[in-house]
Length: 249
Image 1 (cartoon, rainbow, N blue to C red):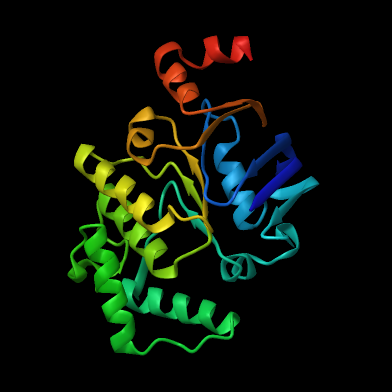
Image 2: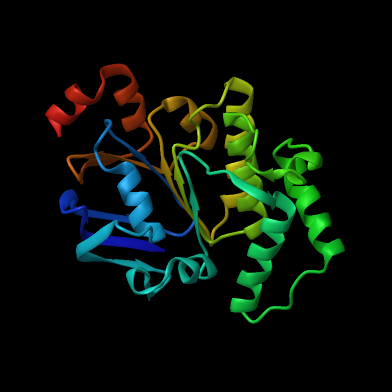
């Protein structure tokens, strides 16, 4: 579903990713772990098409398309979703307005009819309930005045409404308490666990993986994937730390 080969990126002329290769198959949740500064967020931004994250070499194939040849909105319409480590605030725009416009723009790109206001509100209510988010929150401005946990849950509601084929989730567990972590993890499972979908889950901690249960785990360090294994690799990292595991790698 997603195949990355020899990816090199630069930010302001500084090399960050240095030959990263990775493949995520349909139906798979692939977790990425690694120390601070390894390039995890850079990978997510490069896949999403964020400006100034320059790809200098390599390729990314997504659902048989050249992902790097697409603009960010085209990547979204093709089925890619990017969950941010720090979701941004959008003053003056309500969540309901933002999400309905985003969904209908993607439906138009796929040649589908737009949802009516009533159809959208029914969908939004169902997805908000899944993440235990009050619908009143969706009537508020996007992320304005939200706690860290509320921002992450609202972002998962956004993912549920857009229903992507592939989600890149950058430290979705950041800022979550124990209860919110379980809700968000179960939301990821409900929305994205399907034979025709995939997830690249970037995290520092085993606690989210206890809920989501990845199929594969890779360690990103120094701009490259240095080790890949099953879920037991994350448990080993938890017990031994990065230095010990990467020394063996």
